[in-house]
Every structure is written in structure tokens, then in C-alpha cells.
Image 1 (cartoon, rainbow, N blue to C red):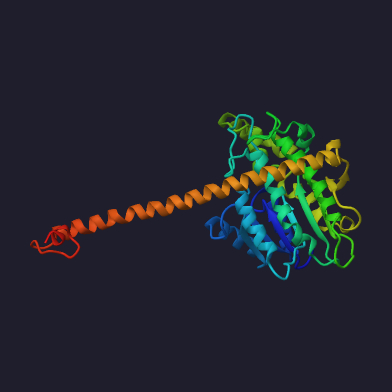
Image 2 (tube, rainbow, N blue to C red):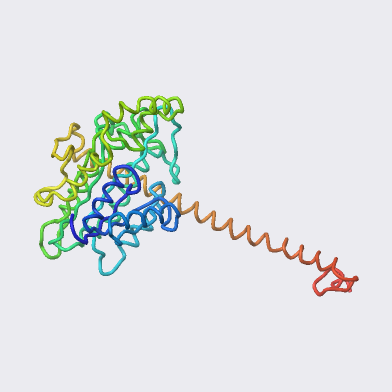
Length: 360
């Protein structure tokens, strides 16, 4: 994408995502970074200023979208969709993810769900589901692309083993299964876009593209190789020359994303393609294109999000109520302190509102 197109990007502050953001900004794209921290965060402010200076592009901004919170995702996406007339949208790049290393402790999202599932899959499902009207509202001559990052771990995933719990992923296969689910959803989302009947009778102009950047020297790769332990990190540092020779640099890993973003042929024909090493590849798991599996996964995800959002709304209501009650309880104490200080002032003069004045 060259020119002033608008690109929403997750994961654009480190690793491959940072390189993609820089390269698109150099070509004049307007980049909106979706970040966990608010735009006022000092690190984020400095990062954006540096990126603007390096690319000579002032059209770089940030919006807070915390992938660990379905509520945060809904706030951003709803605000974007509710804009009238519809905001321009040329590209969505989703390359943020997390992974629990072998000896690491599993984390939970703000919605109390396992982080691999919640961040790698459910957050992307939720975001694209809400943004769907904004994607479909783009004019027919606009080449809209939704680029989703994945990796070869999907081959070992077990999507049929999902459980209706807060940790739905099978043990030892959490990351791979989250990626397999994401790729299955990507194909279903492409069919969802294709099925839309535009008022102008024009064909669908939005295409989903899956990208595997390959093994790259990123913070996520370092965490995986170090297995979440100090001894693993020490071994990683000792073997750094090996990793430097065998793993791609972030600049090399970003090339497949840039190919998906700018290759003209990918803006024509069917969507749902899979890019690796800047070439179109076939899927190695048949579940990805299985409509029955995709339907079951979509319904499972919708139901789970509905339950989680209801629980989240109830939790926020309780917190708000408790906060108000806490403030209400604090007021009498403050008044008592004020009264006590009034009693001790001066030479025994009666102060209005004091116990002594009330006795009198």
C-alpha cells in the first residue's frame, strides 16, 4: 500500500510489527497503532515521535486497545463503526500475540480466560466481528486487506478438542491451537465478507490474507527459546551466534507482511490466501477450510464472548457501586475529624456544629 491509505495495526511497537509500521509509514501510509497502553504513555509518545522523525511522516497515531480486555476492544471498535460517514479503512494488520513458554506460568486475561486463547484468537475474532460493517462500507474501488499473522505451530493444533471452560485449549498445544483457530476463523470471515450483498451491487472488495513470517529473532521467539526460565535465557545468550545465523532478522521476517500489503495480485481474485516466504502456500490442515468446523468454532466463540461480556459488565457495575459506597462512607469520617479539630482550637470557644454547641 503506497499513498495516504489508513492502516490499523496491532503489534506495531516491537519485532516484526515495528518494521512493518516503519516501512508502510515510509511509503506515506497513515498508521494507527492499536496498543495496550494509552497514547499518553511516555514510552509510546517517544516511540511515535521517533517513528515520525525516521519516516518523515506525521500521520502516525495510537489508540488504546487492550487485547486482554473484550471491553477495551468493544469501546474502540464501536467508536470506529459509529462514525458517520464511515471512516476510511484500507488495511488491518493483526500481528500481536502472546505465548506461554514451556516452564512459564499460564496467564489470564482481564476477562479471566487463558491468555493464549484470549489474546491470540478471541481478541481478533471480537475486533473483526465488530469492525465488519466498517469494512463492508468501504467504496468498491478501494482495495481493503485484512492481514493476519500466524506461524507453523498451527500444524500441531487440536481445534476439535476445545472445551467450554476458561482454559479451552488442550494441554501443551495451547499456542498451536490458538493459531489454528485463528486461521480457521480467517477463512470463515472471508466467506462472511463475500456473502454480503452491497447496495451498489458491486462485488466484495475486502480480502483476508494470512501471513507466516517464518522463524525470526523477535521478543516472542526469545521467550520461546528460553522456555521462560533464567537458565533458558542464559543458554539463549550463549547460543546467540547460532540464533543469529539460523533465524531471520525482523527486517527479513517483515517481508512477507509487506508483500501481502503491497502485492497487486493479492488485491484481485479470491481472498483467504496464505503467504509464506513471499509466496502463496497451501494449508497443511484440512480443518482450516472445513465449513462445519468453522461454523462450530464461530458459534462457540460468539457464545463465549457473550458470557464473558455479561460477566465483565456485572463486575464493572459492582466496582462502580463499591467505589461510590466507599466515598460515601469516607465522608462522615472526614466530618468527624473536622469536628474534633474544631473542639481543640482556641480557648474553648464553641464552634458551630461541634458537640459542645449541640449540647448547649
